[in-house]
Image 1 (cartoon, rainbow, N blue to C red):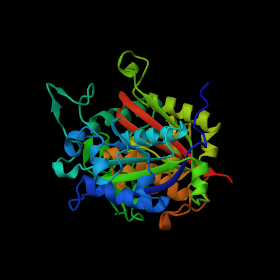
Image 2: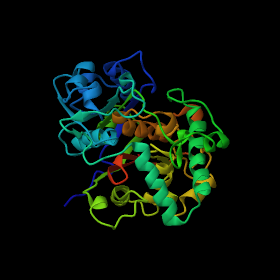
Image 3: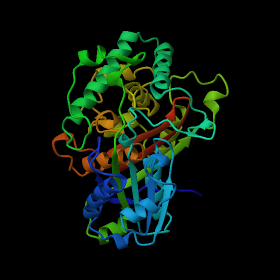
Image 4: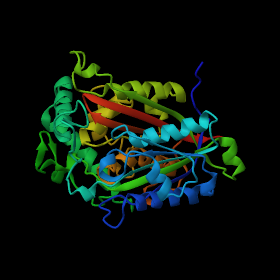
Length: 401
């Protein structure tokens, strides 16, 4: 009977390059930057890595349909390199592959790396491409802001919240992320903003304004994992272990009936419940110390708090305005700036979230280190649109002696 992977795998090294408009580097260079940091952090050599997993969201834009680009850029020694795609949740998917590889006993040390080079397309959002006669993100129509604006409208209607109150809560989400991003030297956007700037910004898709939307970035993030036993033989003392990874993919239920009202992410609720069971978490609101969630839009972060069970259904906007998720709040969220300000290189985002949680757990986050020592940190990575998506939840925490 399946027993899960709790505490069977430890992270021994992580790396992340600076995100942004990286005209100075191609995808290979970005991977080398994040990998170099992870390798030095792990204290191992390349020839000790047994398998690798590469995440890319838009292969035709920057990397072909194989693991070869990562193997060549990182000079991996004829090992298995598997390329994965799962929309914007691809980074966590690569991490899941590497962790499961180690947990299964198939290898001793595995690598997960994500990369995206989007700014070279010259496109302001996600690149629009076609394969044959259909848009390649099959089943998804309309723009991302348009689809997530409908999520906001549905949430507002479901819970009887006024447009102005919802706008203020979403604005607080954005202000918080900009304040946090200003302390992060690797963030794409590092300028604090005020509430009035957000509330008076041009509308992109009502009720979402400019500051409610994350941009896309170039960037790469990387993790090296092994068993706790091997980690200790390598001299590692403070270990961050994987408590759970859960993935839930929409089966079309949201689109095929009237059971879903458009106000929440069904897959996030499923993935979170499974992850909590595996990690032994019974009350996430009191047990989770730190959050990194998929804030592609400010409404996404707000709704996700309810789907993860850290806010009661219909009450997330009140928790947000009460400062619960601020840097000095009960459960800091997006302490590195999140997708909104750190940036959103599609294939790297899930790994970037885990990278920040890893640094915070080890007390190595510098000026943005949270005041209270975190013990359990959760990352939530979402791909697709509200009505058809994939949700990934990864929980990491300090492993006792």
